Amino acid sequence: MDELFKKENIGSEKVLPPLAERMRPNRIEEVLGQDHLLGENGPLKKFFENKKFPSMIFWGPPGVGKTTIAYLIAKYGDYNFVRISAVEAGVKEVKEIINRASIRLSHGQQTLLFIDEIHRFNKAQQDYLLHSVEKGIITLVGATTENPSFEVIPALLSRCQVYKLNPLGRENIVRLINAALERDIELSKYNIRINDYDTFFILSGGDARVALNLLEIAFNLSDKSKDEIIIDKETVYKASQQKTLKFDKKGDYHYDTISAFIKSLRGSDPDAALIWLAKMIDSGEDPLFIARRMIIFASEDVGNSDPLALPIAVSVYQAVQFVGMPEAQINLAQGATYLASCPKSNASYMGLINALEIVRNSPEIEVPLHLRNAPTRLMEQFGYGINYKYPHDYPEHFVDENYFPIGIDESLLYNPADIGYEKRIKERLEKLWNKRYKKTK
Image (cartoon, rainbow, N blue to C red; front, side, top):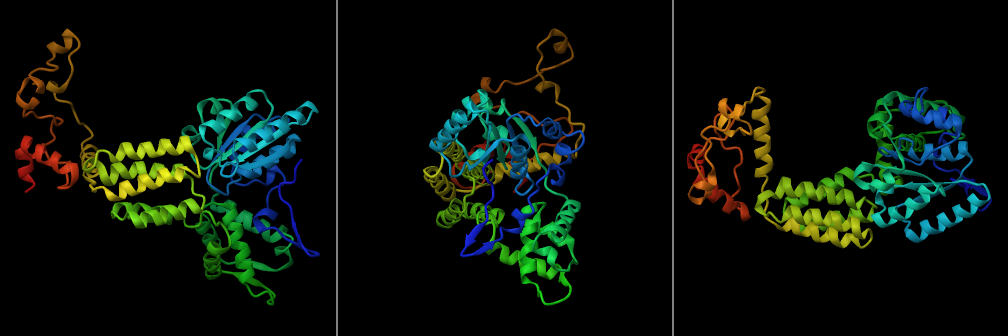
């Protein structure tokens, strides 16, 4: 089996890999937080017992064991382990891997292909994988932080078992840290006491890798000359400050950066939006994640002030799927600058919020008889559809009618902004529902 992690040599000294790699489990019993999969009745437990594995996709947040379980599958099943990242590999690399796997198979050696961030593969790349999975040339294990039903093509998805991994709970983070203190080749040399496990759990967010990175940096910041090294809340927070520079180059400010990007779009600043977009692209952010957020933004913050915003955002998402990186960044830039530059209105979104409040406070909402369909004679006898006025039979295809539920007063929920196309919408609605708009003035 190919070595997954190798120690680097600098001169004659061996450099230890990071703590998170030194603590990677070598047995399934050491994997924490995934008892629903690896516990006594877990579906993966049976595979490990039989040492026969189907193709699988692991879905879950970072640092919960997706790569580790893939590595253990290769170990237990005696597969040749090949790992690639969908961010960096293309069809050419996949083709070479499959060709080598086919040769190995002819000599009785099976290959496990582990694809990290498989959701980054476009349709063409996934289509190419399909044949080798169907023929059993490779056993595929994919890892994704995104819902695979959105990102993996149905044909490939149907040939894989999909398992969702959970973030580690506080108890598991505590067990992980204590195991590192007891077993790690470096930390076990010292008498280390943890004064605040909660801070590790909060700052790690259930990510084992982050928790171990914090522990390692906190240890490095501590005074080793003392008989007992105490790692308290303050030390862990100091470690978290250094962590952003030393580890996780691609994701430390994931949520902060997307927030800054969205706020720049909302603030109609295309130049600032491009800065944040460039930062995300350069950090290796999933381009489809960015495109999805732009689709949400188009309805939430632009709405009907520019009805083209939503179809443009959807087109950007589709373009990113079709084209793939790095060229797809051009599509993202077009979408971002358009959304930032167009007029803004959250009126439709606020209208929904207002309507939801009414519905949730009125559990017995009932449809008036005149708004009900009457497909049968019996329903007509009960008054369904009675006195309904068909708008197209009236001038300007409009009739002043009450469409609200029984017992709910007519009120203004959607209040268009005086900007962009929504200004025209507001003028028309004020004319049609004059009384309703007068109440708000």
